[in-house]
Image (cartoon, rainbow, N blue to C red):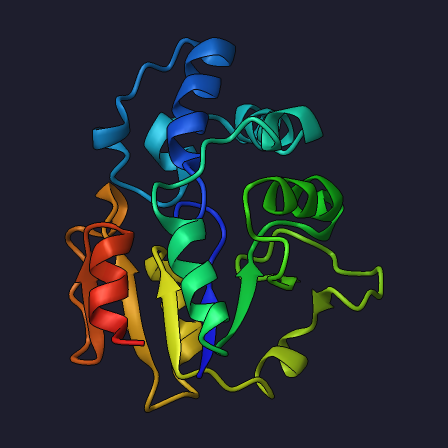
Length: 198
């Protein structure tokens, strides 16, 4: 089996970290449970300039390296790889954050898993060619059997795979999202393990 796994809020607690950053930088105290929008500018009610500052701060190498692992992620993914399944981390992070992101993965037990940056949200110019920077055309040539994703904004990247089973990591910003039949809402990595059935 080939498995797509998103990075932020599937492998690490990025949104929880951003609530702290928004509070520190702008005094915007929004509890994690109230992060109802994947768009953090909307969640924290930030100006364009504040949002750029938030994203810059959140992608500093020392900040990226400080994110907490989502409990159970490395254990389940390790089990899948031990059974011969292929796992690919496909992240919407900009390629400029590749090195610290790769280091975080290596330090948290994901050292066997390849990571690719894909411009899911129109945030990156992707002018730099790299073996780990996917153009959309290259991504659409890839085939997956199972996906783990939290962002409703990324679900459109699965439209070309009609047989794909999608494990939706339950987060505040996707709770009201109506899921297609082949999508399963999962509360944690134990639930993802059970529903993937690998």
